[in-house]
Length: 218
Image (cartoon, rainbow, N blue to C red; front, side, top):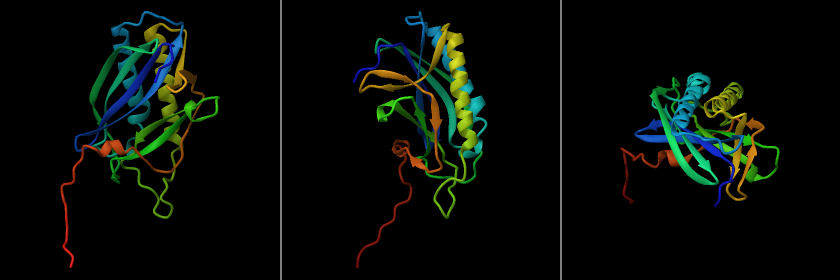
């Protein structure tokens, strides 16, 4: 399916989750003026800034959401022009783990929805934030609160937009929801989350059981 023909960069943050398995999620950005001469060095600088933004404003602040084994280690920025991948750059840092002490399965995630001014599923984005140490309330199966971290995630998006403007020399920029169904990039205008745990099952595919039991009948 086609990507929009506008210039795009996908920023993907990631790290370890447990037992050698990884997590990642990404957000798209676009900017003006079009057809800037983006270089590999500029993209590498931007990836480094995007990683620092995530560490400083979100991951390193809301540390109780995850266990020490769930870490932030890297950020990859991938540049597309005319719907075609041009090149990518990856920045890394020393693994930064959580401080939570209520371990949950590695596939437990917080969904943050990226909202646009248009209705319909293709105009909404979703990111699955690891939440491997955020225990739900026993009586409801829901988390108690998530208001403050949502504001911190907003700060990451705003700061990364500022980094893009500086690093690429753009005049305007912002996060977008990309639809490969209609080949559109629609500006993000709001974020939404709730207190219901969700799952990202792919984050457990590399983990094998270490204990197996069976019984015979009769």
